[in-house]
Length: 163
Image 1: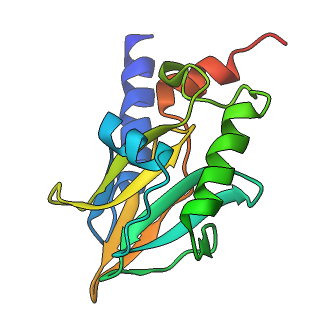
Image 2: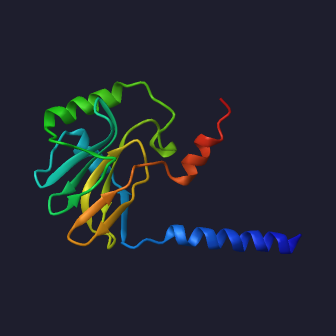
């Protein structure tokens, strides 16, 4: 029986390791209340290009990426974000009925984060109800943002619901 468990553990490691590797380095997000405040005050950074994930009227995530980077994604929609549009989004998101797909630590609120390159340097900002973001950095300053999601701990809570 113990040999069987060791075999399954070894097999799962062999299958998992290739999926974790990537040809290009990756960045992530780091939550920061200062970024939350920036978004909530509707301040637009003129050095950023903005994108949203989800539906326009009520996006799941809003992100700004430094204009020195080219963003390539079929999941994120570019938006010519103005302070007025950001205020509309913030008001809508604050007043919308809460769904169950929020990071558990966010308590039903959107939170801000810095977008970090593989070396940990901030290259953008993020405002979302989801707490997991991964970015692939390719040569020529190309960044590929993956769809946002809940961290594994939150995914487990959501997937194990009884209703």
